[in-house]
Length: 291
Image (cartoon, rainbow, N blue to C red; front, side, top):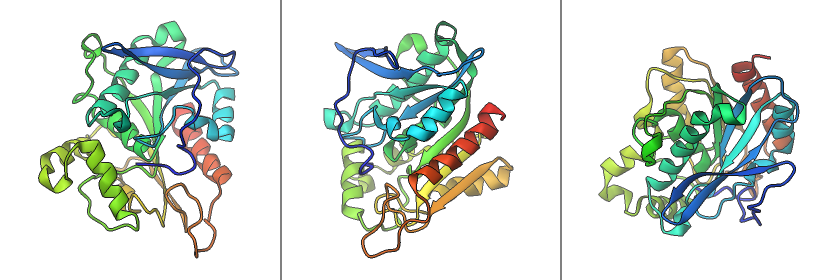
């Protein structure tokens, strides 16, 4: 899914900077897949890790989390390392499950090498916006079903929490949205087929298929006027979580569109980006950092 405003194609640097290390986590043929590692600005001991997956399955950029400057700055000051994963996108001619394979391989790679990087392998948490929210949920719940790097397949990881920003949960859910034609086109590009033609493929690509008893806390942020992913999508998870008694924080941005922006002719969104970041920080502090 796209994420207007936050996933525009950016000029992504591939060289290290004083603030960022570019790490190759996987090679596919002659192509190297990389992630941007932003170390904590203040660390004492092993670092928790925020694995972030950008939105815009076609045109997104791994620079996206830098738009959450307040949130990322506070987390890094608390000793958290940010890893923004660059995965193969549908504009590259790739179909599902390639992006999911890449994100799960990235999680396995960084857990396997946690000692070398100074990471706490028991305190990884994931997040993402739109397509990235979908990938974060798949990474959290479907590690046993995806990933293609042979030497990483035996690596198991534990995800402590999920930050889901307007990500789709069940791709077969047929609630109509204003951008229905765009949504259908995006999903067809992702799956390589009309959804009605391959219901089993749609099921396999949906995070809700892989929900297990070992649930981790989730915060789901969704605009009530989202034009691409219907606002009822996170409620599918909320119902399961409430039944199991596991923390699930539902944050609805009233009048918010897919990027939590204002919809023409509607009142302003009930929360701005800073308030959203504050809610996410409080959630992570409580469920991952224990502060």
